Amino acid sequence: MSDLDFFNAFGAELNSASQTVTSTVGNGAGNIIGGNVITEGNQSVGGHGFSSPFSFGGSENIGSQNVTSTVANGLGNVVGGSVVTEGSQSVGGHGFSSPFSFGSENIGSQNVSSTVANGEGNFVGGSVVTAGSQSVGGHGFSSPFGFGSENIGSQNVSSTVANGLGNVVGGNVVTEGSQSVGGHGFSSPFSSGSENIGVQHVNATVANGVGNFIGGDVVTEGHQSVGDHGLAIHAFH
Image (cartoon, rainbow, N blue to C red; front, side, top):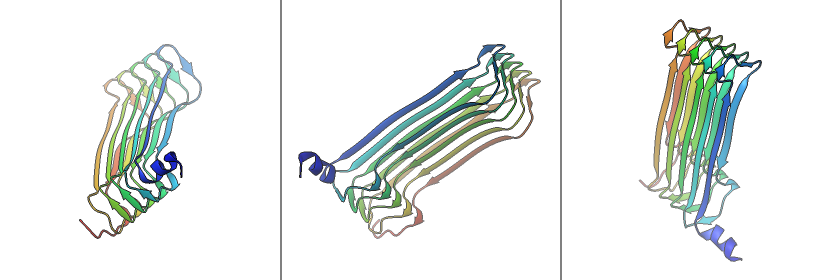
């Protein structure tokens, strides 16, 4: 066994990733976009499949994601279709995690924001959708003997749409956040000292000012789950 093989099997494993996706489209005066404006980020951090059989040093997965769009703000700008801003991030092992895992830590931070059709006389023909989805923690069958695991998730989803004078959105304005923090599927039968922390903010500022119009619905939703999901059997607490 090489030094690297030994380190990966028995030592600490660190996976860290940062993703930034930004669009700045059709801002100013009299700009026209005939179709849709789509800004998307997708990031996965951590092991996939069957992870290290003896991970005593503590695996650590850290993911940071920022997805931002600034579209059709100013005077008389037009987007013929929809404006979609979406972020998706998964942090932690996927599949069957380490049978003997001690001190694992998964940390995910996600920010998804859109600023669309603010100012005067701006027009979006379709919907404005701003959505974030984040999962932090093990997925599938978690460690049978996991001690001291920690999962921390922070999510912010915000939209600022059609504020000012005479701005129009023909469809819906949807702002959604979905976050899950903790084990998913069949959790550890002999786990001790696990900690799951989730913080979520979902904010929408829509059609404030004078003579602004939204043709459809304004929906602002947050969904958060913190802790074990599925079948959980814990012998020690």
